[in-house]
Length: 448
Image: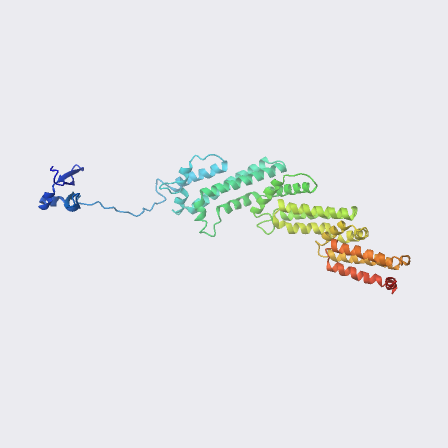
């Protein structure tokens, strides 16, 4: 090869399939391409050379280019003879049973979730019109499990406390199972269920099965409610109970919509309010007569605080209003006229501000309590004031005594009766009444 002449190379394809490099002289290209080169498909390309002159390069290319063809996705049929629905459902059923039994599934997560080409089994079945079958089979699996567990619950739970404990364990584990099962069938829940208004979600379907098979069972319903009411009765009597257990079971009833009367069917609230009414009616009749009024009022206050705390901790918030209404009626409304007449005069006479404030707060919870309290208060002022005015032996100190009485009553109205306008007016009217029982005498004493 003459180094003085710039050389170029070309490639050609041989039958062996290998590329070879062939150097040619620029002079060759000046004369023009040979017939062999034309037949072989060689092309001349002018490229710059390092000496600044352009030369023609000979590059051999294939005579036919390969074409890239893109085909559409092939539609996969569900029911191939070698891949029926049951074969796809089987690992899903195994997964559900493993979740229910808290055991490791024989099918790995990768095998469970992928059917091929990165597609989930549930998604594969749903996109091949098998969503209804999946939903029905899943419901059957859950139903079979809960029926079996119900028989175990009724057979092994002898005592009430053990029964409530086992029922709570069954409920908590069942909720955890529903969460895990839904994660496996999430595609079903977000496509088939979402687009079919008549089909309830997997979570609601699970709750419906538990409610219909467990809480609608007469034995379960009676034992659970009676057990809960017994525990609350023990707490009201001063005993210690498992409040967390009560809270969990009542939350279960709320979730299943069987707690209150306005829900699907009522299990707990009505009977709870009935037992509360029975308890406090008997307690109110007995204690309102046997206890001093201040002591009884403090007991009522304590009961109201206990019931409020009970609502805040484990009862449903919707129970607050009817529960407090029952408590107030049985302990206050039914006996307030009696304990007001029995204790108000003594409290006013001894200026017991704390007890007067408590009485005012208790009766203010009722519809007519403040009216009764105001009338008895006015009667007291008239009675005591008239006694002072009519006592001729007090003539020398009558004005001073009336001023002391007025300051004391003003303080009671301000600090104990919350400056209630009706009580202020009742005090004023009562003073006008007894001042005029001895015509002109109080005025003469004031002038003197």
